[in-house]
Amino acid sequence: QVQPVESGGDLVQPGGSLKISCTAPGFTSNNCGMSWYRESAGGQREWVSSISTYDSETYLRSVKGRFTISKDKPKDTVILQMNSLLPEDTGLYLCKVFGGSRCGAAWGQGTQVTVSS
Image (cartoon, rainbow, N blue to C red):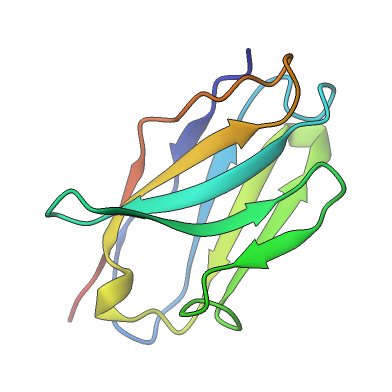
């Protein structure tokens, strides 16, 4: 199974940008996909974006046009570039692997993104 580890979370001002990463050894060689979710302080988790095995990208409507998901295949890493951040983007961002049996469905531990002035 592929185990993801998130990084890059930080405190950023509204309107700012931040790049967070999810590194998962074996992600590329096993042809896996990856999704980003975020969890609010109240514990509600919502899907944010996914990138498939074939590099197809999908986004939550409220982040479309502001967030971009991409792969750095040599580094087994999925990147979420977040621009024009809003306070409501605050949350614990987690990544989840998906794909075939070699990929599994593991969650990472999360990285905290806080958008506040």
